[in-house]
Image 1 (cartoon, rainbow, N blue to C red):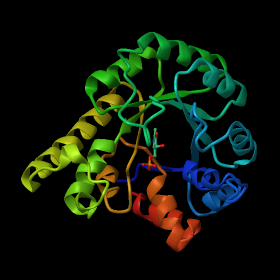
Image 2: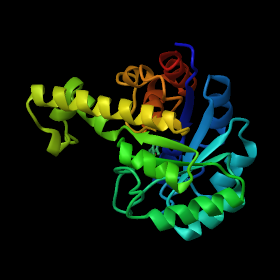
Image 3: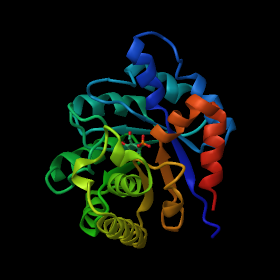
Image 4: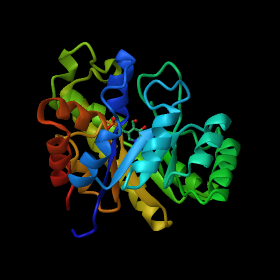
Length: 264
Ligand code: PXP
């Protein structure tokens, strides 16, 4: 397989650490060159409505100083869209957002919020910013994304990642076991196969109608090989696992290793 896969490194988690102490350390800008020289192809950040990690000034500085393209995730909230339209990142990925969630749960509901999404895409296109929609891996969501005018989709790999971890890691024995997935192993296996198949079918359909295909959420050093096998996926956005590993190995090695694992 010689179609390349881009690695987007989501650096929000560095700002999570900084915000936990409400100080200026770690400096998120330090991550930009480390990412660039160790194989990342893109920087991904999420300007959340509650500003729990990335702040407006971070977004501005990252876009100004990153030599890599910046993929900016955001909700369809009008105030956020106005800020981002002014910042002009290389691309925007529209994601659902709930204040009480720990991280993005589920894909964007492209049917329920059809008008808001279409308005957001129009506003971003007016600023010459291409748009990706973060959606659950269903053919219906893919086809709707195309109809709404997106250039790209990012397939939500959260269910796949949870199933993989419940089957292949200590997650079920931890405090963070996924309650609804506390199931017999044979049931987890068959659901995992189905989750992978859904991602494959969605990626194929997206590719066939001219959408670029990314994937992300919960991907890590153990499960990412399953995504690499799907040739229509040309970009992965990965955060938590890279930053978690960097605590032990340093950010440079953590990115290098992920790049190695995601090189086709
Ligand atoms: N892609 C999108 C659209 C996301 O919202 C997130 C989480 O911020 C990621 C990728 C990265 O997920 P993770 O931190 O689990 O690797």
